[in-house]
Length: 120
Length: 407
Image 1 (tube, rainbow over the protein chains, first blue to last red):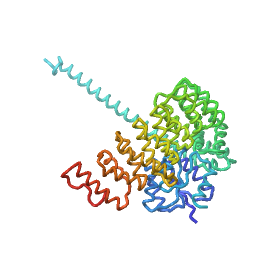
Image 2 (image 1 turned 90 degrees about the vertical axis):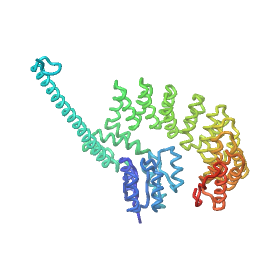
Image 3 (image 1 turned 180 degrees about the vertical axis):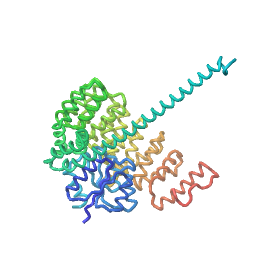
Image 4 (image 1 turned 30 degrees about the vertical axis):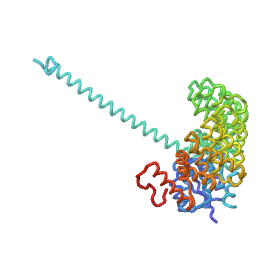
């Protein structure tokens, strides 16, 4: 079973916290610090899940999802937003993102969300 | 005898030459020293920055696994991090991690920051005579959290410096404590920032932290019209469904700015049950209210929820929008056209009728709206015929602009 999660997050500490949470839940994590790395790692490793910070700067999270979908990457996505970013959620929702994680996050909730998105 | 132009003797000329030469040499030496000091400063800063980043990342590697775990080993990991990377890097990692985490993990971090003395140092820095130091400390306390930080920030909300008060307010909102939020609101109302961007930022933060508190503030009557508008916009942008009731009330307010904002919020919140109310608002006297209402229709009609719409209110909305294809204001016509284009077959029929009609303003708005939606093949050919007819009417003798059916 594919248990690889690609974390696309510019902030080093946030990525480390997410990675530690997911590793604790028995998943293997990859970290992309920018859009280019995210596309490269997604194409190379075909992860089971993409945990994407939708506030990515360049390209922004929504553009990144669009690029990935255009390249045939159909990996389920768990979008990460700050509370109250309804427009961003709605734009990502239109591209098929069905589940969101709000920052600041509760580590216990992350595992539950991941299970849900990965169909566990 | 003269030693040169302006000199009475060769000796005087030679002396001047030597003086100039010495000045040039001194200037060169000073330039070299200055360049060396700039390069040195740059190298040292760069090395410090790199070292600080390495310390931060090293500390994060040590702390991250225990910060998200049950927390039993947290203090041991913190001691290890301080030993290897120093208290400054460790404190910074803990403060930043607290911003990323909530629940028990965040509370544990606040306790540790208190235990290792970081919170006390920040509180002590609030007594500094320098404004920037107090501001920095106030922001740090917002990151650190905990009861002591909360008490210190509540006091700092009355600081003599507006910059520090603003930092304290933002930190109080970050702590999400009800008492702190009330103090932040009271402080905000006492010295309403002059810059609308700062005020907008405060409402936006408050709507993210506690939207119901912002709703109470809007209803309290303590805000001027311009402030109610900004606050309501913040609630709409945050997608706060609770804002709908207050937005519906605002549609009846005498101030057109508030009516327009209320219509925009209803559109943003994408609720079909408000369509009859918006259809009424299409008759508003103020053109920008009508334009905003039409724009809200576009948002709502673009959403997938349209299937849930009551057929009678949907039909009334289409009629209302179609009527405004001939509105005297261009923005209203354009927004009404785009809303109709999103509505579906009936809306598009109305646009085709307007595009073929004698009102050239309505025809242009309708064609512009039809150009931005995907049309079925039968409608596509009709659209091209109308475009060519319109072009021929406006620019007789010009060559056809559209070839191959590509818009």
